[in-house]
Amino acid sequence: MRKPLPVFWCFNRSKDAALIKTEEIFWQGPFSWVGFEHLNNLKPIPDVAGVYLFTFEYQDGYIIRSVGVTNSMKKRFYQHTREYRKGNYTVLDVEYAKVGERKEIWHGWEYAKKHRDEFIENKDLILQFVEKELQAYKIFITEVLDRRKRERIEFAIMQSIYSSKEPWDDLVDHGMALRGRFNDEIPIEVKNVCPYKIYGLPKEIEI
Image (cartoon, rainbow, N blue to C red; front, side, top):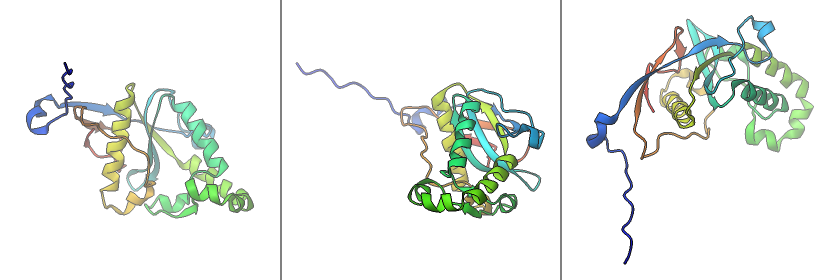
């Protein structure tokens, strides 16, 4: 006798809306990029698991350059520093970024892999801009222990920026590998709480 197929549950917004819960997440910062505390007089990043925002100073607050997730803030930022200095990440002109304009000094990712000779030839100049960028970053974090929740928060913030159509939304890199809510996960309505204004961080998101 054939076994019956298992029952697979998927969230249905019309039937299961009562299951949606609301949570607040609290953003701490601004913190210094790891290793630059003595240059920008900011506190070091707590070594916690969570979601982090790369931001620049902008108008009456801060503007998001990137969003990421990690099990260890310090380990992850050391990794980011190495990748920047290897030429694997895109490097921006900070002075343009602070007015919401993307001006690339060096394009990372696949371009960097295919043009190593170009990076080596201009390495000294590119690394000068790398150091300026890392020193200029103001980091905000929220501690989140659950890995899937971290991924869902990252996805929701980035999707909000991608769809914003604001002049500054091009500061973030497009084409990131993001993992939003799966069909069998119940949505969570998240309220972002921060004492500072962060452009690109919505007051509310659904993850």
